[in-house]
Amino acid sequence: MRWLGRYILFIGSLFKNREPFRVYVQQILNECVNIGIDSLVIVVIVSTFIGAVTAVQTAYNMVSPFIPNYIIGMLVRDMVVLELAPTITSVVLAGKVGSHIAGSLGTMRITEQIDAIEIMGINSASYLVLPKIIGAIIVFPMLVILAAFLGIYGGFVAGVATNALTQVEYVYGVQYEFVPFNVGFMLIKTVVFAFIIASISSFSGFFTKGGALEVGKASTQAVTSSCIAVLLADYIISQLLLV
Image (cartoon, rainbow, N blue to C red):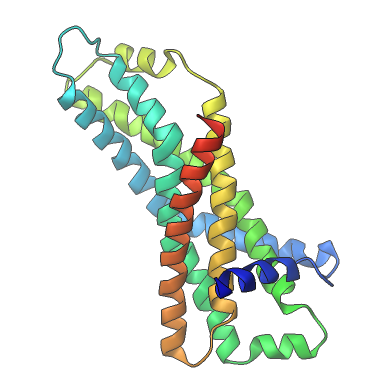
């Protein structure tokens, strides 16, 4: 549990003796670009095919003639919004964004760039890490909203293309008994996941010791820890807000 205590102290240090907010604005914008633009392609591909596969497998398992076809659209919508878009997208981003954050901070640590920042009297943790966390919290919900839309659309294309249901049936199913809270639940989970991924990855990279090999190990550890933490947080949030 020693690492947990260090992690909590690390998060607390982000808000001590920090620079004026205007100093962080450009860094936050840069992090938003690095996280968002560079992750668009993988998010588009993964979310579209996940929606398509969900629709096809749902249609395959609907063997009863008493179940209307529009149920496929409803199930795809609920699965994508409640779980697939926020969780799968966050796990994918943990691999891409998390490894990048840990690797960049780890490289700065072993090349003594962080030490140089601290010598100048700047809170290096706040200056380097806080923009990454804020940028992730801003961009992750945007990517997840896009993933949810593309997941539902991918289900539409796959369902209609395989003649599992008509366009009208799918659209009706997507609208059927829609619960607006589910969208809010999706965004709440996404914000929590964004904080977890950015902070754990930063923690792993910030305290890297050794050389290039240790930077690679820190990146791997960041991805593994972030994925486990995301899945654990997913269960806790679902238990608190849905049960």
